[in-house]
Length: 177
Image (cartoon, rainbow, N blue to C red; front, side):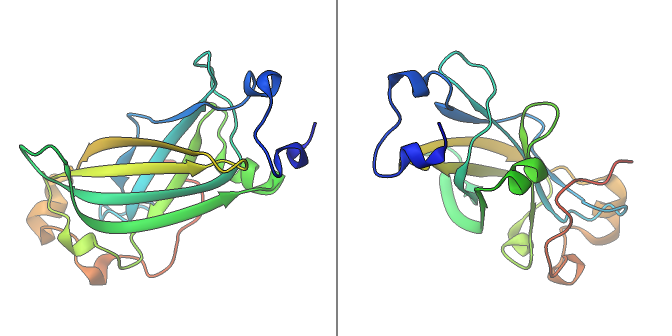
């Protein structure tokens, strides 16, 4: 049964056995450089959709991601929103671009001038991931991420400045060192 079965309604009980039920931001998610320098270019988000049995499965639909400041000692840990990204996965090509052999999605979320000047080395941030399913359900996860910059970067320039950040999105896969 193709995706057209979801238009105008929710998947049936049998289909739900095979579909993602939740998404989980993986611990490999981090603020990173996407090229050969030490200046952070954005966030490498590693996201795993899982079915009701906890097994990884692919997920199509609209994803959006937000980076927030972390508020200590508060019931609402999210402070100011620093950045917003979105990705839609609705073709085979897009699925192949973002899905890895480790059965997870990898998204390079480039700063592109948004909020990076407010990042402080040693600071904590909240990253949220939201998936809007083709049948119009919302599934969310969030994680606290720490900003660790290499010592040379900290002593050379402190936090990244807007001039250090890329103006366009990088390639979809991280550079292997």
